[in-house]
Image 1 (cartoon, one colour):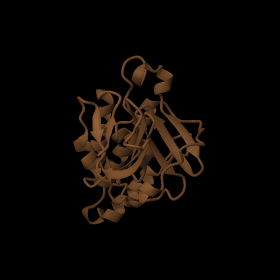
Image 2 (tube, rainbow, N blue to C red; image 1 turned 90 degrees about the vertical axis):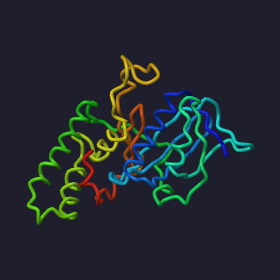
Image 3 (spheres, one colour; image 1 turned 30 degrees about the vertical axis):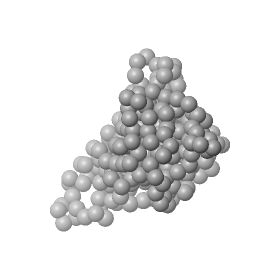
Image 4 (cartoon, rainbow, N blue to C red; image 1 turned 180 degrees about the horizontal axis):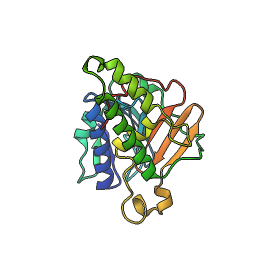
Length: 237
């Protein structure tokens, strides 16, 4: 079994937090791991949002396992979480599992171009809060006989598929980013690792049919086609 040597306890804690949030929505969640050099990318898909979440993790030393200098495997998120040792800043790579369909269709690695118009972080968080409040108000107002799964999903689809003002980014992407801990305020004066404040601001990027909301703590990607999906209405956390 190969071992990932994370950069420090903070990286281990953030990885554990990300995995815990994914498991909150799906106890059988899987994640795809890709490691090369001192960078590890952890891909997950919280089902309530129908997006792909990416957590970048810094490694203390380049990944290696025997003659292997890179890693690309899909594993159980629960097993990976159990293997994280925050004090030692390590995580053991669990046995591979049969990957869900999304694991074979990841966002491109390159070709990302900045997109204009993304509001400030506090505006993004306010947008999510307003959407959650609207969903609750509208569903609470439904007569009991109309409070069906189809009706709730229809309201949720309408609200969460709306674009964030000035962009083509669906509100559900921002909701997912906040729920997964990617939109939390940067600590201190600067961003993570002492980065200047401007580096801690979220950014919006596009590559082909993909849109990506990138923050210092992780990214959420979504295809710009086929955005209408079910199961969005009941996620208000």
